[in-house]
Length: 283
Image (cartoon, rainbow, N blue to C red; front, side):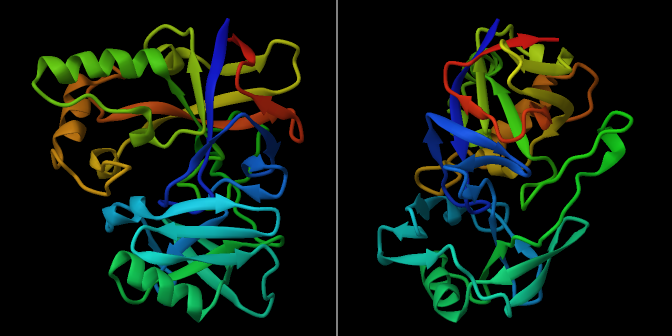
């Protein structure tokens, strides 16, 4: 059986996340203590266009913390700022993430000013996915009759990665005089070990051994320049070379591009606990 070796949640899209021992499987992905969802917040311009590390790699330096009552943002050069979980329902704002128009809620001017100082960019807002916000997953790669929801992640509620695949790719990088990458470059939610390299690309279902939950792997994850960003420093030490190497490595074996990890939905077990150490049946 495969086994979960790590779980990660990223409360704010493109800011730093953190590891968990366990999480709840919520409607839009992993949830911390059933209070905060993965990618529940997004950065956006005042016109509503989302902002990520693709444009601002320095966002990686903004750390996130979750308390019982608030999201807290930290930066080494600025005093931390706390954003209560309760929000103003009159501050509704449309946000565009790729082709999706999503109703969100603006966290206010003081948070926007803090972000502008922390990342050196004006016109940057923090937008929350509210209790009445909706964003269905595209059915293009789902099976017949399936449906799923996602917050501000790129397109799917869960990203699954395989440690053996990263080990093999890192050997390739070393052979080409490039630095190996840590798993945090790929910002996965569920990291699986005791799997053959790239077995995720031939897997449709991951089911917890006692059938408490089941994840459906539905689409390989195409990678972007974000994997070239050092998630500790916010710098791109080798520029686009790791991404170029992943394209040349051709993990899918069809020349289609740079892929690592699998986008997944929750097929069964919403509300269940997912934990590090869970053993998974691979179908």
